Image (cartoon, rainbow, N blue to C red; front, side, top):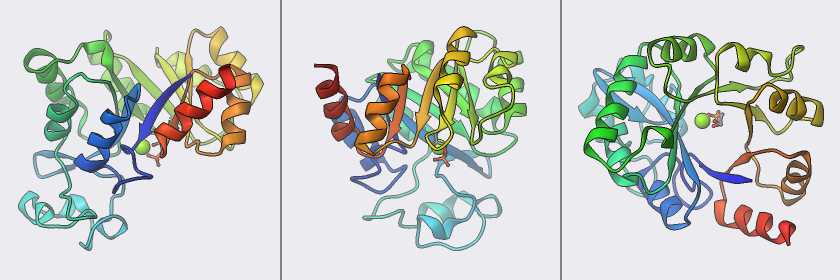
Length: 233
Ligand code: G3P
Ligand code: MG
């Protein structure tokens, strides 16, 4: 079972910062999950639409100028990073799951990832583009069919993982509060990987391992990896 560092090693450092990402790399995680928004023409790594959740700023990100948000403290003196700064730091040392948090970023994200494959040490297969906005995923997959997408859900849909199969997704990402054995079996029968968020509870890790889940998103990746290794013994 793979471990994704959720927003970097966000249990140990401010989420979605270069510090959290560097810690996750040092923990030798399988992959790192980050959230991406746009400010002017720049792609930036932050979870919420409003700045006050994770920075000392106020207001909506989309209404700011790039230089303004770069002066903010995202925790521990860290800046809000750009997507390119994260790509340069990770540099193919592990996988990267880019969650699209807003509209109108499909092509700019794609261009950055393509540049990372040609200029950095990334292979295309190390990237997984995910979103709760399935229209964005559909757009991405239609334009770039060779790239992997992961369809997010925060529910247990009536037709289980059918929505992800329709998108020709690589994986389906489901909330730990809703995943069950029927969903996992249905997704696997459709040829999809199942990744579950956000999992830090040791009992949940055990249940998910028994269900045959392919990966979890964890805020405490080392602890989760140790737990998985122990359960596999
Ligand atoms: O991608 C897994 C998880 O990050 C989705 O939810 O709100 O943490 O971005 P959220
Ligand atoms: Mg996310």
